[in-house]
Length: 240
Length: 293
Image 1 (cartoon, each protein chain N blue to C red):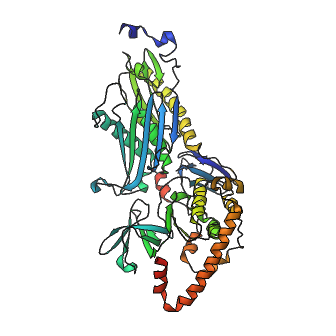
Image 2: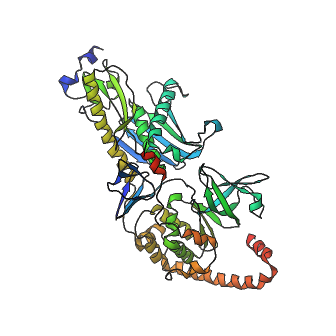
Image 3: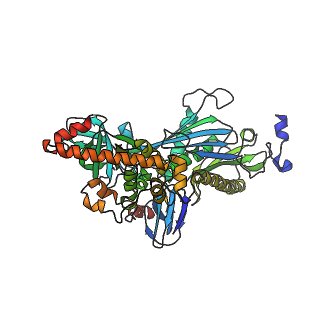
């Protein structure tokens, strides 16, 4: 497994491998699609991006801002290229422009608009933004980093995949600093361990926390940092 | 005039500014200079100074410009009024429109446009100072800014000006050479890993033999530009191991105060839980009101 900073169009692997995220194939070789860190293992090649806007994916937990109120529902900004829509029926609260909404992406249509389900209004707290593609590092494997941050700062914390972080109570000032640090060093190794040592907190094996709580936030945050499905969108371009 | 006609690069073996025939002017690129943009780059190439900013992919407006099959790349080339010896009138002129168009078309070749239907990717390039070859400088900077914005691309775009001046094929012409009596200017941009040409214009006439030499020299020059671009994009990031000290250095909080805070919070939480359990019977409404306060 080798790690290297790559620019778009840089050769990652000359061998035939399973395609991870952010790579494409030309002339039988695998190239990077974005600026990021290449991750080439024995059977798979992928690139973890360093910069970029949020691209909605099914099952993502996102934090949206209400940008538009009409009779039928609410326009929700997710930092994506298109705003999403929540019908009035789907949510019990009356929302106003500027309100924060926690929701889950059910599906993404052909115009990259996210269909949101389980909308919930977020009351109080603070929101800050990080580079969306770096937010997985705030969650960590199986939500380990999230757990460390929660334990270390005593905050109620929700990390949206679209790069918005919501926090309430606890030591928000230090949380902000630590999150800025994580964002800046998102591509470096041993990040979770460094933060854990810094806070001096211990995590239980296998996080019984995840299984006990029936909280959908933690549930779906687990999915990051695992390998992605083969991106078939590249296959068409091969034949061009 | 008579002085210029005397100059012959074949005899002098050196250019007016002392460069070799196949040498580019000093080139430096800095990436991520404009905080409000999604991606940006600042480029200095000889006397040329260029800013590029990328916004998007975002909803394309007005709506009739949207294409449901792909993203529209809107490059805007603009020269500051002080970028040339005589003041330039600030509005976009014929030349600006042309360059905006060729830049858009060159960049469209490298971006995976079909991933972002109905959107636009706005590329704003601003020339603050110019001295021949500003369109290639802009294209080089724009490619870096696109990569900095994290937009999926097939490749970067590296561009360079080549051509003929003072009876010799030269790389990266400056203004004096561009004004030579026999000058031929060929802006050339390629995708460096595949070598595909995405921009090629020619101002003047060349023989077939001269053209072959110009093309070969230009592609060689583009590869030099590519190395600088790559360095500019990657030098901000170094893969290294992190440890506790690095975090403490950056965050600057002592561990002892930290623990106290955490302890306090825990106590707070317990108090709250007790209070909550008392008020639980009143139902959910009273709870949410309490939080709103």
